[in-house]
Length: 188
Image (cartoon, rainbow, N blue to C red; front, side, top):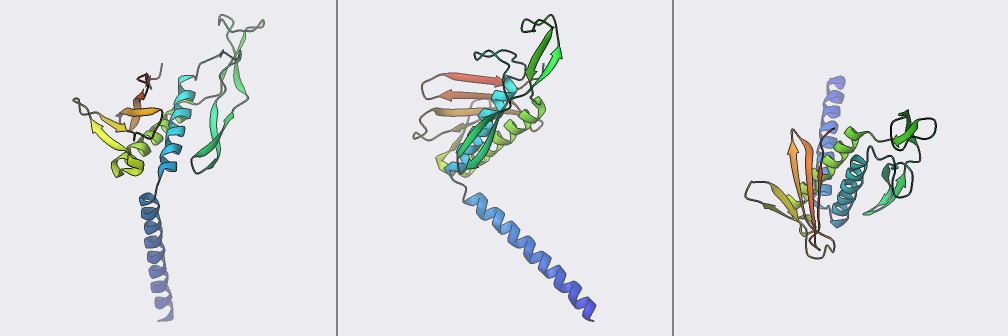
């Protein structure tokens, strides 16, 4: 009898813990604010920049592109850290090869960067569906969704995302000054 009672209590305690965790999740989701939106925007920019420059062997600074990572995030403020090492490959025909024929490429995993960009885009889309931070969803004539940013966002007017099989394949950003940027996430 005592053993059966302890098993029942264990089940009840596990159910209470599960309900408490679910409530915490829903409260956290409902309470997300502009700092969550800004953090998702930063993650999207950083991972997209890394993906785009995955093969850049020479930047305006004169060296290979150094992968960026967000660190020490406090609310929506993060530091950007540059990965100091690259991958050295023997490629004597490359225009950036040194005298021994070696080229340093960025140490970037394009698939990981794509997954991180996708998760940030999905987060932004979900925030917009909930109206967090006055974000709105708009559909164009083709049925594609765009996120419309509030007027107090000084730089971005809208972001449009195209997904295929759950992965981001295209991101278009229109700035308030009218400039457009498009990144197509296609493996070469």
